[in-house]
Length: 410
Image 1 (tube, helix red, strand yellow):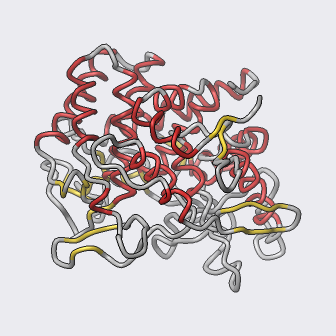
Image 2 (cartoon, rainbow, N blue to C red):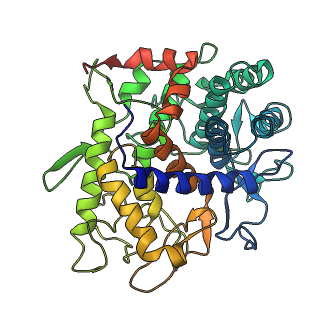
C-alpha cells in the first residue's frame, strides 16, 4: 500500500531520490556498468581509496536505480535501458566469477578483483536482486530478460552450503577456499536465502531457512528479532515485500512489522543517549555502519555488554532513509530536519553525505553507493511500491517465497 504523503514530503523525496540516482548514473563505467563503491559528495575529486574501485552490491542497486529512473522518466528511456543492457552483458560474459558468485570489490573499468577481496554471497545476492528487478521492469526486452536469467541461473547455491553445519557460507577466496563465517543469525541473509530457495537448478533445502537463529532483542517496550544494525533489516526488504507474509510453518514472524519495531526501537535507543550526545532528538537520529571522523566503523548494532561501543554522536542519514518504507511517519520528518538544519554542508549533488557529526561539525567528504542505494529503493517503495512489485513478480522469487511463507490477512 502506497503511503499518504504531503505534497512537500513527496517533493522532498523526489529531490532526494533523483540525486541518489545521479550517483549511480555518473559513477558507473558506461561500458561495464560497474559502480564506484564511494565518491566525493560533489561528484568530482575522489580519494585514492575510492579511485576506480567498484562495489558489486552497489552495482545491483545501480541496475535498480535505472529501473526507477525509467519508470519516473528522469532520463531518456533508451539511454537508461542501454545502460542496463551493457551492465548485464558485462556481468554475463566478462565479469570474473566463481560458480556464478562475484567478488565483493572490482576495478570499475575492467571488472578485475581488487584488494584480494572475497567472493561474497550477500554482495552477489544484491547484484542478483538488481538483475531480476530489471528483468521484470524491462520484461518486453528479450535480451535483458535472457541476460538476467542467465546470470541468476549460473549461480551454484548449493556450492556455498556448508554440509557440516547446514548454513550458507558468507565467502570464498581462491587463496584460502571457503572462509569460516556462515549465516547463523537473522540478518541481511534473508534475501540470499530466498534467492537460493527459488533456484530451479541449484536450490538449497527448505530447512536451511528455518535453521538460522532469530535472535531476540528487547529495548524498553520494544521486542523484535535481529540484533544486527538497522541496515540488516533494510537491505533485504528493499526488494522483498514481506508486509503480508509470515513464515508460519515454524516462527510465525511478519518480518516487515518486525522491522517497523526495529526502526522505532533504533530511534528510541538514539534518544536514550541524549545525555551523552545532546544533538540527538526525535528528528535527528540514526546510526548504522558508516564513515566517521576516524574511518569506517561497524556501529549501530545491539551490543549486549557495550551498547554504546564506538558511538560518538555521528548521524548516518541512510539509517533513517533505508527505513522510509517501514516508518515514514518518523523517517520523513527526520530526513527533512537533516536537510533543513544541516543541508548547507551535508546535502549535495548526490543527496546526503554518508555521515556527519552535529557536535564536532565533521561532515563526511564522500558518499557510499550502497547507502545511497538503500535510501533510493526505500523511498521508491514508500512512494509507489514499485521495486517490490517488480521483484516479487519474478518467478524465481515467487518460488522461493512460496516455500517458506504464508500470506496473512489484510
